[in-house]
Image (cartoon, rainbow, N blue to C red; front, side, top):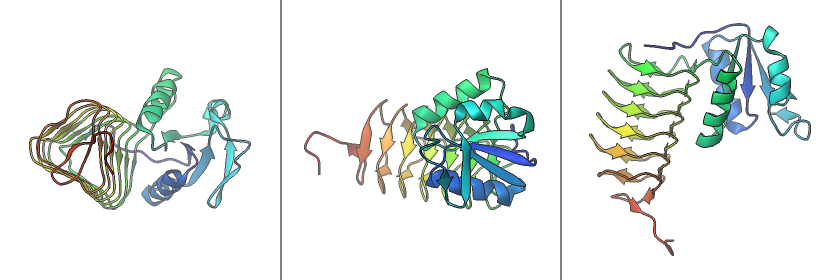
Length: 217
């Protein structure tokens, strides 16, 4: 598996939110000794759960000499991707966080900056693009290909040979049939069952999943 998560003493988490708290606990479970939070809402926001927010993204860049890695913990796929690119351009060591209760196949490829939370499963020869969120108890089966900054929500399941384009979001409890192609910037609604290909930019809901239309309730 490429880009295996590494651990060190101090991890910076960019994004002080509920998702950030989950990432912090996953990082500590994976062996990081300490985490520090940074968020653009600082100094107006100074606390997230039991952690203080140290500063904003500018402060993070000034603290790199004492940090062992940085992860972006922001749920919005486009914002997360933009920040990852900025960090890479600045030469920041962006790391992946793989919870010890995640199960990642040794033949899978996982891009940098990915977060895999407890119970997430990635099976044989899957390819996960950079900056993915593999949320609690989701599964990505054999030979799936995920683009950059994809979010697979808690309890969502992709059958084998599924492809998901950049910045797409598979909602909580959704399922995707084998061999389906999902485009970029797609939103799959909670509990949806995707049984056919989805074009770029669509929001689909229901069983079977269909594009939302004006007036849908």
